[in-house]
Image 1 (cartoon, rainbow, N blue to C red):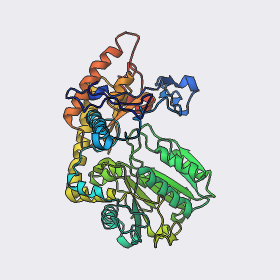
Image 2: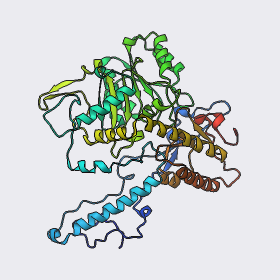
Image 3: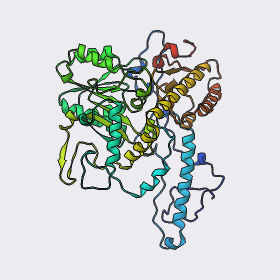
Image 4: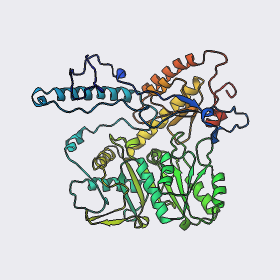
Length: 491
């Protein structure tokens, strides 16, 4: 069959027919992953976030029921053994070429309708293709030459110095490395805090990224979850109460420079003030700033509060594949040199020292980051940040104009709105959902034309979801505030 991809067969060693991608191939027809059923909170008991507040209808929390195993799993492309005569026929090469061509079509289609996750898909790295022939590995300390010579440390240190300048710390006062992802940066930052204060308590807002709570489990740390404001920002009143209840132990704090769902930025200055007013001197607390996306955007926003090592913070991490844009996940972690000795150890096998979490590290990622930083520079990033914020306001205004509940935090390009009722629509646009809300993260690759396409489709679909008089859009005032809710009660 033209355009068919063999998934699994009864006899995996036999490929009866091989055909290259048909001209009329429809990428949307690629085997779809099954959708998990949608369940309500009532199925699993009430959650803390379901408390009814005055003037706000009690929300019904929706969530996907995710069960470990293969019931929610990408269809498998079987690995098959080459035929004995394949070297002469070339059938296997032709088969694999067809699979890859179809996969590329799928990627193009999914990139076209990608809005829910903070990845900048607008990049061009053709000049770096020549380096894909090398296994570049930056294992060990970026600042110490090891026995492994096929590395890109010179690029890595250049990138780290750039971020050190951005966050205002001198070259001889910082240590850092390029991580394999944003989560690794958080794991490292929290680990440094734990090593500085072995008996410290980890404080993190309830809307912190899940990797923060993963770190607490991995390191067996006592973790206190702090309430948040409607915006998603940490509630420093609740933070103060919980600090005072544990005054006898040092504090390790995760500060969000953009929360995962609402894009809220914790007030770093207020967090520091709360610590000081609660009796915590600077030698009794450690602050890690999770800057995943907005840690790189905020420095280019006028009047935005600074994330800087001139304040009493211990570490900052950002993702490299988000705002910068990179074809592989990566991140940057910067901490103070004075803290790193507690983690660093000699590795004779490498003739180096190591204070990283992983062993081998992708040596290509630093080159991609170095390339983009050189091409765009501060002015280029400033233009992209302004474009993202401008387009985010455009999306929010058009949603509100269409009678759809929507919220956009200051300093953020994450637009939060009512969760679409149709899971196929959610899947098509790859929207991130939590409870009754969904969001679009406006990145440099998200154009006005793309937003218009999304909005037109959403408005059209929504008109079919709420046709009956008794069938009304949900109230999401508890999630976005009464002033941002367009339900029948609050509009």
